Length: 115
Image (cartoon, rainbow, N blue to C red):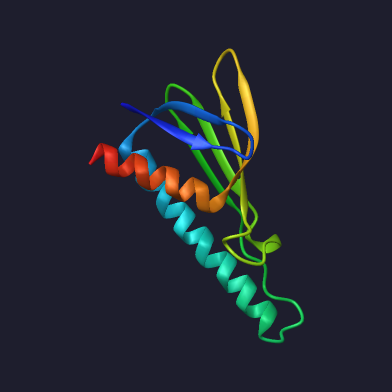
């Protein structure tokens, strides 16, 4: 297992993560981006109320528990989106926000290193 570093709004967290889990998280994020774009497009196309999209709730349990959450209905674009990250184990719990685009970069870097 190699370590993944996620850059937060303030600071960063590093923890053991598997390449397979990183690929799963990346797929969830790609779906989230599509949902954000769909909501944004329907808002600008003149519809009064776009149909809401389901929030992304990714969960990973290994040496630590990781949860990544984002509501695609509140951001005008993927570039403005933030994700709520919770990382915990038996001794500590950290909850913070991270920029979606920065999290994608962190995941891509991790996947390049592990392939």
